Length: 138
Image (cartoon, rainbow, N blue to C red; front, side, top):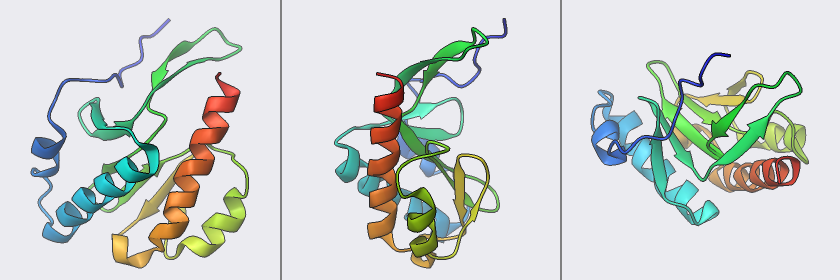
């Protein structure tokens, strides 16, 4: 079975953020770190080369595939900032409706810049996603 490529590393989160070329996105990322830190009570860690994760959990699928993943986190990408949440959690659609300008994929929520969204709603999404994951994988 293939090994999970995205693992927690000892790489520096600030050093990684400082490689983000866009000044606004880089500033947003430092603010997002503080927002996640205050909401989760956890310190940011690098997962793979480009994901900033908070906490971790162990998953095991019916297929037998298992591994570790961050409870929640984000990644500055070339065209957006991706937030990593559970694919389903309480009030997900309602919260997404109140979040502000974003797009979604399975469990990711994408924004262009922090000023496009309501950070209080983002905090609620972080909390709800973490509760869901902790309950599902406890």
